[in-house]
Length: 263
Image (cartoon, rainbow, N blue to C red):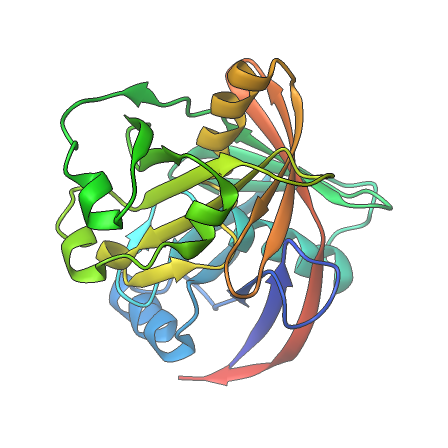
């Protein structure tokens, strides 16, 4: 069976940057094990599986190792494909029914905007050894229910981190967000995201992490409108607008591959 498949670089306006995601349109209702095998075959940080419904699309996300409950860049990539291929018109919202509830994306001439749940972190003393594993001094350690958040002293400190991935994988969290204030405009803060427990040692640009980073930096900087830069090897940026229990995450995407999957 030939299944439409796309690879999209998300949170970037040029190819070979941002975070690549595969977007798959399987027939019928695929088995979980099959979707996991496809994600392992694609070997990207996320593969999105979309199924059309009466009021939008069902959407699930798989890393090469496991299913996750929330993913930003693969949602952005999915919306991009729907508009680019004519499955949706620009005036129509992309509506996704997911494990994290209804997620919507709006098309815009300058960027797409996702409406996601806000996940502000709570300070914790349960992970004091995390700073040692990262090899840094921590100004703050918190948890948002899914991920751990560590603020470090500066952007150069953040960029220099070389984590012990084996030890990071022992923490019972989807991943570890590390962040610091940005040294240069137009960015307000920088971050990196490590998720070896989920099969992704370092994610290039993590939209869902900004559900935590947005509220965190909004409180500290006194600003609801923020721009975050994820300082991975590929790099990418996220526009953020904090609205109470929701965050709006903006970005662009570029299709780099389209074809058919046979499996």
